[in-house]
Length: 320
Ligand SMILES: Nc1ncnc2c1ncn2[C@@H]1O[C@H](COP(=O)(O)OP(=O)(O)OP(=O)(O)O)[C@@H](O)[C@H]1O
Image 1 (cartoon, rainbow, N blue to C red):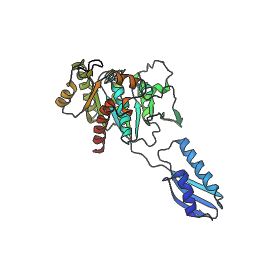
Image 2 (tube, rainbow, N blue to C red):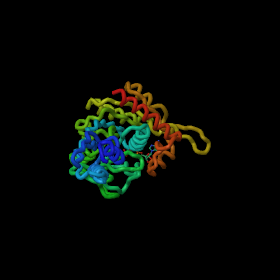
Image 3 (spheres, rainbow, N blue to C red):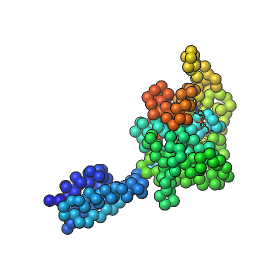
Image 4 (cartoon, rainbow, N blue to C red):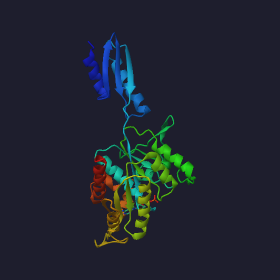
């Protein structure tokens, strides 16, 4: 004979941990289903599964499901540099994957709308995001780091030549998307310190910024400008990462420093901000990241370098 415990056992099979307030009377089951973090399609699927399972039970003729969704508190972390080409996107991808591997719910916004690279780095090029009403649904990938990028909306190879306000609007769409249960959103910022960057900061108030620089003086001067911009917008700097430091010759093993060494650490010290770590210049980092298999998904030495930075970022976030 069907009773509440049979019904709850059936619900465990299709909606474990998501149902509450189950009642059963005169052939009618009512329950509350927590659909927080699920998109419209997944909500539909779980509702169908629940109804199908319960209507199979003896004596159940009707099932009423009330759906609720708890609001997820989401924090934005900006990854920025003063100039292009210093490895901001590479760091963003690897940081996001390393954070995900630390057990965090991480998403990625490719705010570099003029030169999007996240679809390639996260190996989901050519996929188009679906929409739920006016909201975009982030694109899933093998790394469990849902992502939205203009690269998913523009045609492959199409040049994106927008003026400021349009670019700003596009960025809004990416950030205000249906992020589900994502709690931490890494924002791969466009290079430079212009209007798009400033209005993004004012509208969305990232909790903090990670600044990436190569060790040479010129890049560091640009990094200082990026730091100024965040200071103006009163967004805390989480710290500085030195990228492309120390090149190890694959033949003789000798380490050389094509862009200098320790510059970013010294600059961080001068500016009174934490130093988050150093990523070596290594062709394997370029090959694997650009090939859509970023080193952060491995435990090798490069993966470890990104993981160390991710741990410091996670500690900073946990102490807020
Ligand atoms: N540590 C590294 N070792 C070797 N190659 C690297 C390293 N970091 C980044 N690269 C390579 O340098 C190139 C530029 O990196 P990336 O696109 O991440 O820079 P960026 O600062 O985001 O540039 P942009 O602002 O133009 O988008 C890429 O081909 C990337 O693979």
